[in-house]
Image (cartoon, rainbow, N blue to C red; front, side):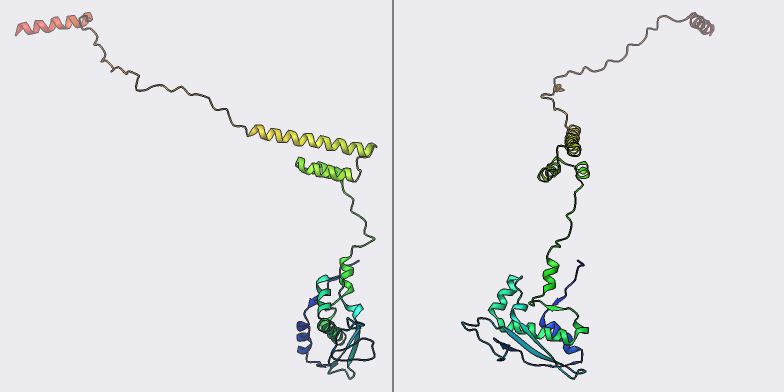
Length: 252
């Protein structure tokens, strides 16, 4: 079934579209009836008729000689599928039943302007059809092998295993056995990955005690100057030079 978009508006928004077209030529009063023969613009509940059975209205268009006259039935229009609006219809039948009668008249008279627009409190079978699941839609088959291979955590793998067991995927044949083996192998891989990651982030052990040297108790002796080398031994060349110098001195 192709998706059908339903545009919803209030009765005021619809009337602004109709009145602004320049083609609207008036709307007659809404009339109600319990039997389709006696009509009145007012209605009151009774023991025999707690709700009105019919409503009708006339809509006039300038370029059409005959007015559009619509008659609707309560059972065909009340939005039973929507508890909120159904309750409002029962609480104020003239208001909501009358709005719907005018909306049906506007839609038939100004189809080119309104298309398939509905008002928010109007019962519409198309909404029920769109909301209902398609009976002939085939269920989507899951690729169990791919889901097992793509699982990144043991939690996700547990969920896949739970669904697989509920669907009775692990059958006593080659296909079921292979899937179960793949599940167990993937679980081991995830556990190994988690263990490796945990060991990589382990912090080194802190020593229980640290030996600290007492700097204040350590005696530092001052450095002594180097002892000069003895000067009593001189090479022979130096001794000869001294003798020559002494002779020169004696001549003076």
